[in-house]
Image (cartoon, rainbow, N blue to C red):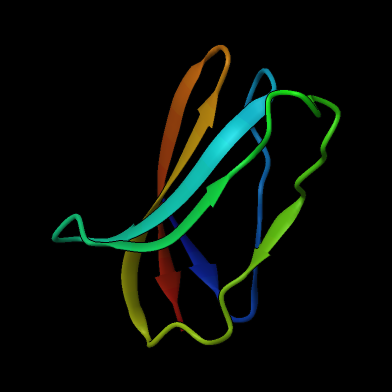
Length: 76
């Protein structure tokens, strides 16, 4: 499923503590890379500002202590 996004990408449907979030284009080039400190496991991430991204298709990879979740989204 591809998620349409305009300004803010909501992060849901993951299990565990988020360690890292990457947004890549379809060629695999990393556009946004957010690493989180394991010393602060209660750090909560609910959304990412994607308003400055050009229109197009992207992948978001959410790395947690339980595994990796990958989703497609379209920046409109």
